Amino acid sequence: MKKLSEYLFLWAAGGCLYYGFEILFRGFSHWSMFVLGGVCLVFFTVQGKMVHWEDPLWRQVLRCTVFVTGMEFITGIVVNKWLQLDVWDYSGLPFQLFGQICLQFTIIFSGLCAAGIFLSGYLLYWLYGEEKPQYHVL
Image (cartoon, rainbow, N blue to C red; front, side, top):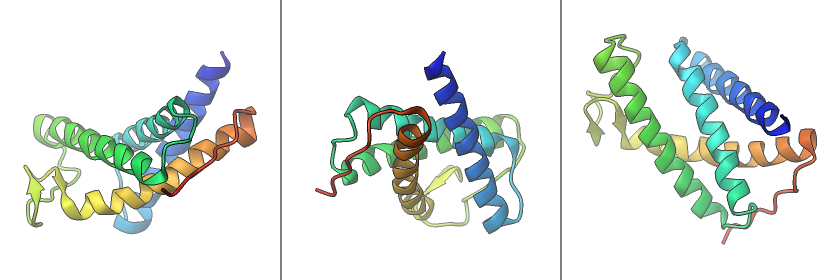
């Protein structure tokens, strides 16, 4: 039951944070971004716990950035293409794929991933008594 509580809390926190970032920087968001932000923060936690937070930070950021970009692509195909909700469209940007992902936002997401990795590890430590994360740059 404790694990379910942890993951639901992290999912809700990730959803609120990402939804909030979108409101702050874009002026609007969509409920699917709440879901996606939550899923991503849970992934940051799971990957960190699997390696006991001992992988170098750059490797964790890379792993999470690939995950986030992949999930953004899948979410975009479902939300923007299949459901035609037009939440975002990167078609006008260089280095994009079907208008759903692009290099510029992948780079931005890498910074958010780094913050999310720190946040998820310390939230579990402070709120749930999990092992204290030990981050290593190299």
